[in-house]
Length: 311
Image (cartoon, rainbow, N blue to C red; front, side, top):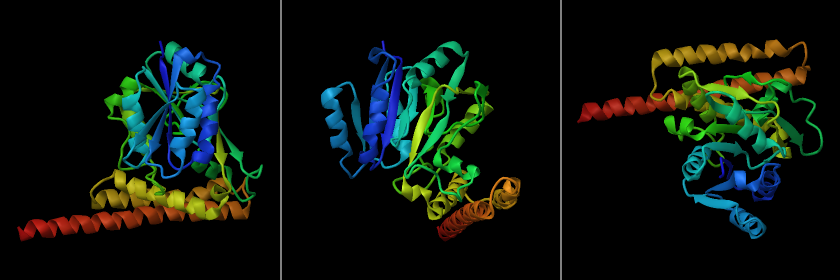
């Protein structure tokens, strides 16, 4: 009986998807123990054809088209479609080590009350090496994850490489669909939003150093302009999570984001001037994203007030 569903959510990455799927097909675990589910998040390229080609040799690979664009919608569709106790997520531009499924299954079997599990995410650079200006701190925006060589309790796990007890996800209604990547929109925070709620309920979240994934970094993600867009998306996502504009919340978050901009001082001993400058630019972009979305929410709040008065 299958116990685990490996879910690969994808959007317009047909050229990379094949590697992700084959890395799960080639697992050391028996095919009878897990299933592979590809959720196509309204792709407009030849994603469906790529999966159909694979299905000719591996008919057990399942394909589902999700017409509602957005990573959170795709993940939630995967949770709904999965018919197993454990659901694991792998990015469509990543590849899993051969023992990935086995480590997931063993962890959920042996760790008491485990709700969420993740592992290392190492970066594979197109062009063989990372840019010289790219600080280690910024690699986390590319899904890098490493908490050491031992199993430890953690507060957050990267979406590129994570697994859950399905009932735990269903308890929280899955992932927040107002945030997370939506097509080319650089929104984020859906995983953080989930983990905050899980921690409040004292759910067990574990990092397993043997549950390894490698994440591909194409050349376009190795540009400063890309990181500015990502960090601006971080700021906008933080604004969206707070919902309607509230002045006290606004002031508190502006303070936190502004003081967070001084994070660059933490790295002055180990990074060069250019790297420090890029970190500073990214922190300013995050503040900018938050501010502009808060202005949008404030206008929306004022508009609703005017509407109520006119009735």
